[in-house]
Image 1 (spheres, rainbow, N blue to C red):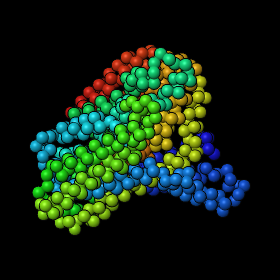
Image 2 (image 1 turned 60 degrees about the vertical axis):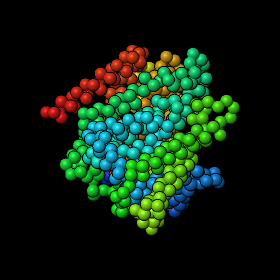
Image 3 (image 1 turned 45 degrees about the vertical axis):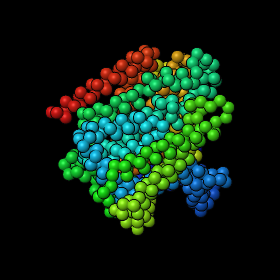
Image 4 (image 1 turned 135 degrees about the vertical axis):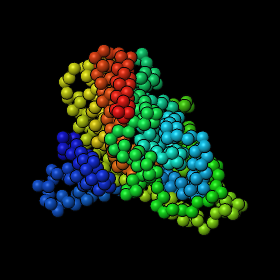
Length: 527
């Protein structure tokens, strides 16, 4: 039943279970099973129950195996991500043992003394670290967590800040892995429709002010930090953090958190945290340029480097450099300063790896269900329905925004939605009104990021939870109201843009609605 209406049943089941049970692994497991059942529903009568069950088990096993081995060779991208998470867990453990986290928290407390300042610092870091969303989510979390914890900012709020400043910044930055990927997709779309008045890079730059969801999502983060706008279940987490100092729900496990309290050196310094993070950043960014340069054939430019770079390998190389520097500092404390016990070495490694296991489990389950949803051709079905609808061309941007959002939400991948929906949006716009080409493409990019923000099976969402040390479903449920509100505001903006054929009016209406929303919520909070 691939490519039919039945193909949307498994993601809907998984997402409903996540909301109802708040148990992500159980929900993803049921989603995986239902996807395999739908895939083989037609053969039940012809082959019998035994053969049908065997096919279901084989399909699930093949998807699991495909995480690590693809087409007879190692699936290095997925393996590198898992290894990087384990390295990050070990770095975190040894930074804690060395007293770096404690020292950085005490130092930062003298510089940033308010909850607003701590949240704004995390937001600014999320905006300036725009190379890649994976790296952004994990690096910003490592730097910001000691500071936000000290200022009693809930981990759910930190995860929201990280998630809403990673993909939104990357999708509008031409000098990023996202930008290079999108520009590479735009090139054949423009060529196919004979568009020569602007280049793929120029088209990308013109799309930026049309990406209304991204603009509102970033403004929302700033407003939430400055005006303390706590909506929905975020109120519960923030109130608990401010009243009791507990930044997470003590009844729930969190991602990326050490399971066992490790002894902390009381003579640690800020450098014990800063130098491993610097090594991690320098190693990753340097590797991004190096792998991109090596893979580029012909003329080497900054854009060709980002288009051809190997992000997952770069993360692994950066993680290796980070752990090397971390261990050097640990051995200096153990042998030169004699302030920590060297016997903590194996314990730090084991506890660091264990801290990342919940995140790895969720990521593995998410990869399996994403693969099965791909086999069901859920995205293809939704894209086909868009082409089939005969609607007023003025509503094309908002329709593409909604469909791309649902596709990314159901499939858990914004990049997959880009690859599927951008060419289709180009074909529809070219056939209806070529002047709507760029707004249509922008709406797809915006909707993809929106759906990615809402999806519990999105790897970016999972890694944002991990970076912040938040319970995953707590992050999903607290971010959802902000994402939906931003999407509603952006959707109205796309309607205005489509009806007026004016980017300025679409953007202006969006900003006005956002200001009205902030004033309304703030006045209600005061009341």
